[in-house]
Length: 419
Image 1 (cartoon, rainbow, N blue to C red):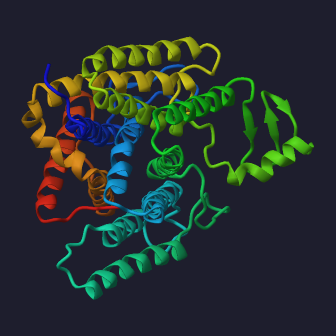
Image 2: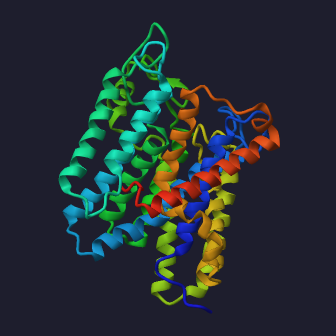
Image 3: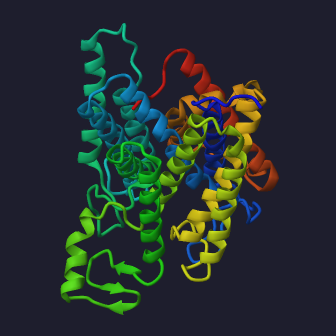
């Protein structure tokens, strides 16, 4: 059997495919009359659509990549302080972008100075100015000037921001942190755990078990509910408002960054799979990789369906354990298939056309903001014929492909984000 590499190209391919599909499902969300199985399931439904598998797959891939990224930093002789700084800076960037994106959802154009679309375009341009992968040859004064301009733009947009309903207008405030923010928190927690346990597989597995247990308990016997205005606190349906426990929950809520640990469980699950792979390669037991990962993937799926009746069903919106485990299983098996295709059979060239989605992933995620909000700013709508049913889905997929190809052109000009 061919010797498998220590660094997997299949991770980049899986990331690229997932990002392409993320752009597709995000765009398809605005298409009318599409099959129910493609779209997101509603909040109280006990099911998931195809769109509900994409975000968890991305979190899982963050975990797959995490050991390689941190170990590379350590191998470069970076000090402990530098590695921790690297983790904190990457997390902060994602949290800042997520914070702005989640407030974008609540933007009140009638109360604000500028339209929602203009505000979205300005913050997206600011993200590029701050986190662009500037060439080493660029004068530092020019680079710092551009980054300072980006920071000033974000501050300015925060100052003029108006959100909420008419009559209850407010400034920017955190809520669910947005997609990028959730990835940021998951990366921060899992990267710090990985660093603390020094990348040892047993430590990673124990951490995953603890996070999965928190997720299961949070959706069963320890289900905690706190109203947004904190006037009511309940545990498993029992009102504990005003009690010592209720007050303690309200006090600790701002510091409990892992929430129900769903995103961290997904991310740490990816780190476990990477750790198993690396361990078997290190021991020269690559022939065991196939059986091991197939078994783990199937166990994830079985656990998800077994937990379904007891932990609020399958739901992405409620981030239930069944959703976490089933998506972990799907992504594990997809990853294994790509290891075979890309790393064993060498079919990497078949995926070259979507390579930018795996190497400039954040850029791919943000470019659609320019597309969507430019159309909105100039009040341009798609004709009904390409915004309904199959033609609409085809248009969404072609949009995703064009964006990835466009990012590939930007990448050649070194116009890509790097955090």
